[in-house]
Amino acid sequence: MTDRTDEPLLLTPGPLTTSRTTKEVMLRDWGSRDGEFIAMNARVRDHLVELAGGAETHTAILLQGAGTFAVEAMIGTLVPRQGKLLILINGAYGRRMAQLSKVIGRTYVTLETPEDTPPDPAAVAAVLAADPAVTHVAMVYCETTSGLLNPLAEVAVVVAAAGRRLLIDAMSAFGALPCDAREIRYDALVSSFNKCLEGVPGAAFVICRRAALEAAAGNAHSVVLDLHDQWVFMERAGQWRFTAPTHVIAAFDRALAEHAAEGGIAGRGARYRRNCQVLIAGMRAMGFRTLLPDALQAPIIVTFHIPSDPRFAFEEFYDRLRRRGYVIYPGKVTAADTFRIGCIGRLSEADMRGALTAIRGVLDEMGVRVPVAAVAASSL
Ligand SMILES: *Cc1c(COP(=O)(O)O)cnc(C)c1O
Image (cartoon, rainbow, N blue to C red; front, top):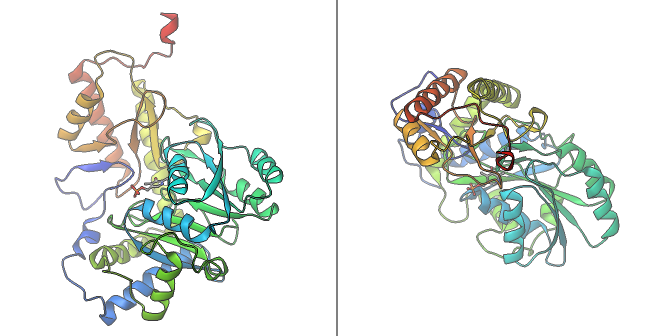
């Protein structure tokens, strides 16, 4: 975008490229009892609740750490020790919720579909009907493993109809895709400073139904990940329990103002959709194939099949692109042989075209032939 330097562009789902102006506000120190800092915290929290459409019903709790800290805090605080979770899984982030639920001692069952397949809301309804012990359902909105958009609104309807409570990992969606609490019924939603809201990494937040939070005192398995305690303390003192990531919050305050100036969720989502369209069209024109059909693709990150040409070595491809100033996601997480390129962060359509030019150049240097053959190896 306009504030380009010679730093590499991160085409990754976090840490991601942030604006120069967001980084610049970190060039000063704040005392945690400073009135200006306390006002900044309040402003950030109000802004998040407003973005979530939750002014009447929800509150925002800020938490130090990576996004997963907040996912663990959400599950540990909101699911009572006698509760039971149904976790919908179709990628690494759904699996991670199951893993952390096991470690913190929350009972759960899973409903798993392949990485290119969204859960069927009717199947969710069937599990809930068959298992009255399930109190909460947890799902990932955009499964960043593949870039798949899960049917959040449809699942939310089924969960509400069954009288259960919904917890959402909206990490890579909040700020760019709709999740308005007036339209989608949920008890809690997690996201981080450093995804679609384009803050710097180091903290995350949970948008939480106030009534659910009030009922959650004493549930948590952990002191530092107790959202109820973090909330009570911040409401009372306007401050964080434990050292606040002051610079990270200041940068986030600025990033939220830039999000609003871009047109909020609609404006940010429109830029990411353009980035995604340019990327997919350019890659397909070179002969690459996407893992997902367009109907399931979220405008966040795109997974491409690895070219079948044996001259394609991912590490070399990655390193050569890096030398040209583009950092893509360093490694595959899907079951299929793939690589991923992100569309989020401070990136424009022109940046995506620059990346495509660099990819073309690198393929030529490596002597790699695309199109990617669609024939199965077994038929050769
Ligand atoms: C990025 C991400 C997370 C959290 O990642 P951290 O590395 O803990 O910040 C969780 N879920 C999804 C869907 C994500 O995209």
